Image (cartoon, rainbow, N blue to C red):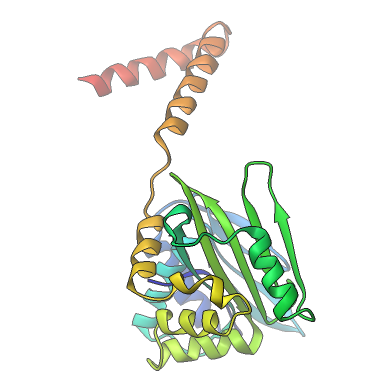
Length: 263
């Protein structure tokens, strides 16, 4: 299924801010702390990427909520279920993800970049290639109403993600279509992809297989080898702390706690 990967709402209504904050704390039970995003001051999750805040704009209070990653998909589903109104959707991102090497044809960074170059040379596009064999192709600018990102995402294996970032009236139109039940997230993603300059290279992102792959990718746990490395690094750090006279009591307390867990 297509997922919302980022959502941002604004509103002049204090009630909207109260509802957003209530929803964030109810859905994401992690702790929160004071934070500032742009000119907005408020609170954000410590472990979950959400923020709710307020600012004065043109001498009037204005409120904002933004949630990113897979949590944005959870948040917007809750917002739609509650039927919250009187909000302006200023940005919404849709994405689908598939295992890169499972595609019948795995387009490369240059394939996608050249397709835009040849088919829509006047469309702004760029690419970034990482040292770890990852890459990203951008179609549009950060300031554009629509920005397309196609990139390699490393999970348990390389995945290819196609992501559309909508802003301003495009974001509002997409949200209204969702809120009024005229279109689903899958419908919106399919429309955006079919209109894309690189659709011919990404046809596998249409259909049930693409939807299931996206859902599976969003649930991938951290790789086991990364967990092992983290534990090994922690062991080295604890050994160093144990030899520090001031820190040794805290290390001993941790050892006692670990012994308790073994019982």
